[in-house]
Amino acid sequence: MRSRRRSFRRANLAPSSSSGCSRQLPIPILLPQLIAQIGMDVVVEEVTQIWGQGLSQVKALDCFSHHFRSGRFSCLLGPSGCGKSTLIQIIGGLEPATAGHVRVQDPQRPDRARPLGADSVMVWQNLNLFPWRNVIGNIAFGLEMRGMSRAERYHRANAFIASVGLRGFEHHLPGQLSGGMRQRVALARALIMERPVLLMDEPFAALDAQTKIVMQEELLKIFDRTHKTILFVTHAIEEAILLGDEVVVMTARPGRIKEVIPIALPRPRLLEMVNTKEFGALFDRTFHLIREEVTAALAQQAALVASQP
Image (cartoon, rainbow, N blue to C red; front, side, top):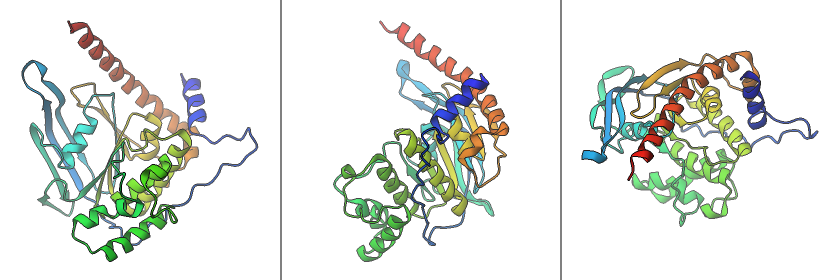
């Protein structure tokens, strides 16, 4: 088991030296000073989510409770269909919960809850860029919806375009960019809103292996700089451990918390940590937990297919 895990990590994460070529360094993200240096607590209490009615009813979440602490990076890990994406959509105010409560609050003033969505911004797996808007138009869109003048929002957008290494591509359409460049546009569009909670729904899942590594490294730099409260949905064990301060392992549907694994690896995080003994121990612990739930999820799917006429 251990040898298989390590060989998988080396093949997919670690830089190769066999070719004699040094690894190309990514363009650094140098964040503008205007990003807020604050965080918010996200308190989820007994949240249940049910989709549909009658015989077609599906319970996605069941009494999910967790306190996501301000300024921490929390990764949600679980099998497909366990309600990870549903949960962050509820936290972001995009979907109402069937039952339970979510509070987004200043840790210094926990008695004053904020409206859901007022302090968070979402980064999606499919990016949701407007194909008819160029790079600067996409990044500045949220500020436009706030009523900010064109001159001011473009001035701020240009700062973020430079920060994510896209200077010179301001007037390119999304279809003219690579996958990694489009992901940088989506990230800049989220960061420019200066909200303390960043909700990320498998943002790197569709990227090729090399680009994914670069974006993981850049996200770590952003977190080290801003200490936003980040909730990050992923299916990848290595990604969850490398990025997170904690890994919230979820059960097969309906989603509940199986275990919360604290990640005590030092920051700043480096890719080379994946080959350490500490990382390996965390991987093995997480793998055994998630394997049970993936097996249960596959059994659920098989039973559903067998029940179809």
